Image 1 (tube, rainbow, N blue to C red):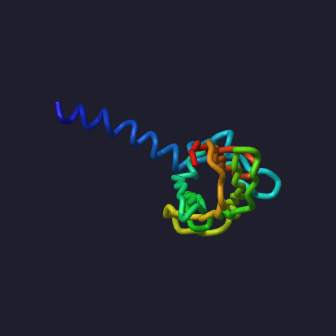
Image 2: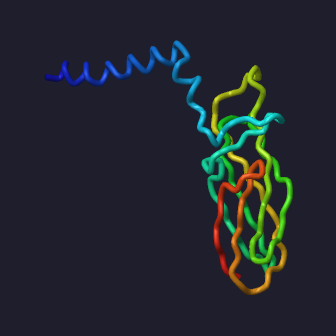
Amino acid sequence: MKIIKIMVMLIPLILIVSCIQEGEVSKGSKQPSEQLNQSNSYYPSTKLVKDIAILNFNKEWIAIVTFELPTPCHNISFIGIEFEKNNINLFFEYKKPPKNQVCIQVIEQYNQTIDLGKLKSGNYTLNIFINEKKVWSRKFSV
């Protein structure tokens, strides 16, 4: 009975390994929201944003955005901030490395601290845009 259970578990594993070796799985694995544009920018999913902390220090507000990048060769940079009524929009650019670049395969965390300044009392929405696409949103009150 144990042999049958082992065989049932090994057959799918063997099929997956053979597909990966032939390149069939890796070629079609990109999500539609993760396609390259002309400037080698990557339109990422919300999986890149790991967490956001919105903190108040002596009436000065800051946002700490934590990203989780697939490798240290992937790059995300802060572009700017836009205040639109009670919406605070943070803009980032994400680029993946060139295809031929060799890079260690380890998840890289990137933190960006952004000064939001003094905010009036009220309800706000913090929006994260990566490559001009809104990927994350959080409401908070002051």
